[in-house]
Amino acid sequence: MIIVSPSILSADFANLERDIKRVEDAGANWLHIDVMDGHFVPNITIGVPVVKSIKKVTKLPLDVHLMIENPEKYVESFAKAGADIITFHFEASKDINGLIRLIKSFGVKAGMSIKPKTPADVVFPYLNALDLLLVMTVEPGFGGQKFMQDCAEKIPAIKEKAKDNLIIQVDGGINAQTARICTQYGANSLVAGNYIYGSNDIQKAIKSLV
Image 1 (cartoon, rainbow, N blue to C red):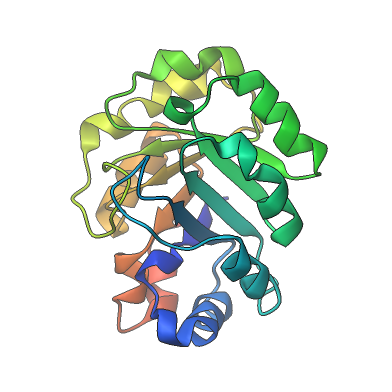
Image 2 (cartoon, rainbow, N blue to C red; image 1 turned 180 degrees about the vertical axis):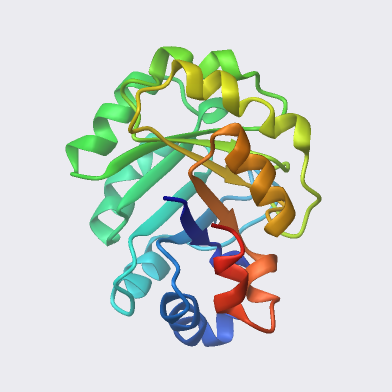
């Protein structure tokens, strides 16, 4: 099964509940929420209050991607706001094992992400403790960037080392064509924003990814 997690970064924020319902009704599995702080990445998006509000209007699991410095400071707040998965960046953490334990202590799935220039082997020591490993195929910070295939080429090495139930997620430039590349490499979760929300037929767009 391929888990499709539409990114609300590409939704209409003036009509966020409507756009969440659109992907929910169209067959999305999760909802991907990009949290950016303007420091770890050069953009600012949403925070805890919005996640708390989203939780009230959807039954989809909230897949919260923290592109922020000092993620350990905010884990409890996002967990209590309703996050079902919290993904932090390898590059932003000083104590990865401690952060994984912290996330799981709130009954939330723990994910870790790596930027395009970060090699695959840095994640190997943590794969057994993680629920999800997110491979970025664009530089984090903005939607609508072009897919970087060399980043997706990290997936087979990660899959070889990973436990069978690890979710290997890919985010960045995902469409019907790049989704095939990622799933053939071994990914089983795909994040897509512009491709889904920019489509005239959201249900068809989601189905084309699986």
